[in-house]
Image (cartoon, rainbow, N blue to C red; front, side, top):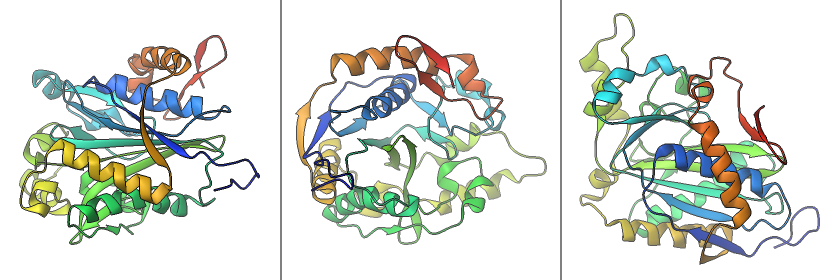
Length: 292
């Protein structure tokens, strides 16, 4: 493949395997890899994430007041903020992936087309497990009305039998693309609902039923619980076929590890967690790191 600029497209997708770690570490690493992808020589990355301890991840622009922080703390659940938009996700009994591509990888120029291309890897993975998934088509306004990501769907999401099975989000910087997303393995709606603050006059039982009806877990859709290895292999094959890149086991470069360490400081900071301006973004300069 050749990129639009005439520069040869990457041929390899690095599979970065890391042990379970905190949501702060995961989100900082995703963002760090996106920053590194803007520079020449970056080889695309595929990651699968295991969250320890469990965490709720907020969308970049989401108001933290939508969460009951005391309830989260009492249950030992971290609260982290993603670099991407969208609504809250509970990372417990879930399967989360990340794909990071440099500007030299040829993607459609429009956002829906870009989502469809990368999400095609997820569709192929689910097909290998016997499921047919379709792209969600709800407008973004429907998505923004709800505090929980899986209570709604938009053009970035995949559905099985009309119910959302995978929610994804993107961040693009200087031609580089980060897309990450989550599939729920088991239904944790009741627990997740307890972690959300209820609006005035909101009927708790009705809201919980809506949340449960709006999404489907992998266990329910398959009628069984697949092993993590089965899931990983399906996703590896799906992305390898869709992106036409050869997946190879790899490690982070020293430069990527350095940027990751600096980004994690920002991702743990109160400024980013509260994000009252709703326009903050952790950004690194050549020698220091700042808020952009």
